[in-house]
Length: 281
Image (cartoon, rainbow, N blue to C red):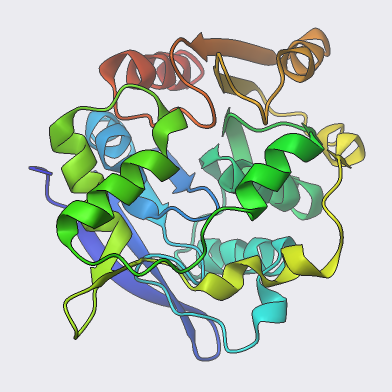
């Protein structure tokens, strides 16, 4: 990426540091906090951040166990209450009373969780391919993904990344290479591993995978919302998205040739985010 990001590590609880990437004026009137999906990282939002940096302070965070953030000593704490707690602590440490929130998949659910305990912290909410009903079939495909593949070369690593995230939609060869670089870590023996703690899956193994309904939490959200959906998404079903819109206060944008979840790398995916945020300033 050509743009210059400030990278910091913030201690959110004793001994646990989260890595953040920041761009835009520190004294901007608005801050956009970007939170990634289950196995992803803060750099997924670099293109969105670069586009928004003329009007916003944009902060993207690596959730614990991902990217450049610390891994948790006890895998039992890789759960949503911990992620919500960490994000609230991060806002406190950064002295941010309120942010606009952009969350992809897990990051959107964390935002809904933050809203359930401190709704005043979120002014506007953007959910990327996530909602209050998660079907079993889609969750099972996520849980069954390889957790710690050993990839013999950079070419093998890129092939794996392309397969794993194929549903992200149209991505250029240059962006696949960049995504591989930001999603993997080379090991001392020359092999590559994915850039997350395999133990982030630990709590998924404790109970059978089934449908998840979060409508009570969703019903607490009162902020204006932009809902992004991949037209072929199996996690955010069309019926769920339309049900969210029917309640009112939700704008829906769908992207063709995407499943779960739109990459937010393409101009046609970033522009609706910018337009909506600036419209609601």
